[in-house]
Image 1 (cartoon, each protein chain N blue to C red):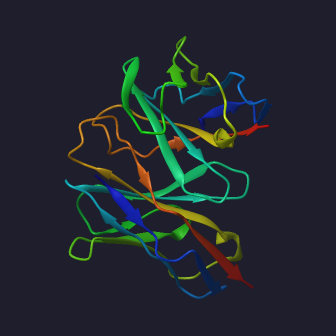
Image 2: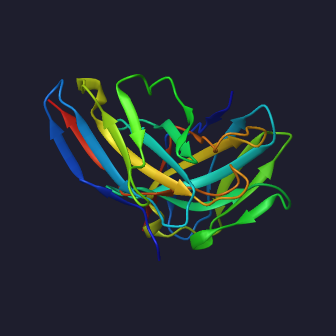
Length: 116
Length: 116
């Protein structure tokens, strides 16, 4: 069964450093997402991506965040200058094409980001 | 704006008993409703969804949910709980009138514990 994969599983970085979180969505999916989950808290939407551009982003997704689909398979989230409060589990998700919104999202296992 | 409420942080049931995990929602347009389950150190897994049609939807692992428009609820149910159902459950909503790529808003999650 196809699945979303994410690397690395755990990333430790120093405050102020740049990190890139990588995701490989399911191959025939057209919509891509990033969510984050701070330990013990709710899953928060960051950004959605369709047709090689950002479709929607939350207020969390400020100028220090960016997303990219550099090739036909990878989908990356970059945090330019990490802050302590960026420590969280970051989930990538993808969903099929067609009418946006009706298809369930398939989530990766997550990358745990720890900012020291 | 869209929002989801899961009024119970924890639900405890005995194995073999029926279980209910509650969810209420608020959206401007038609609601697209989803349930996901999260096991420890794993990503979210899709259980079931309501888009349109029959108010009672059936999903994976014997779970079902009933859409109630008048009460704006989408409670998750299972007739006979298993110990292996113990996990964190998230209700999510999308606004069917949103033409963007389907941002999901998640509830805070409900921890289900099934005791032998």
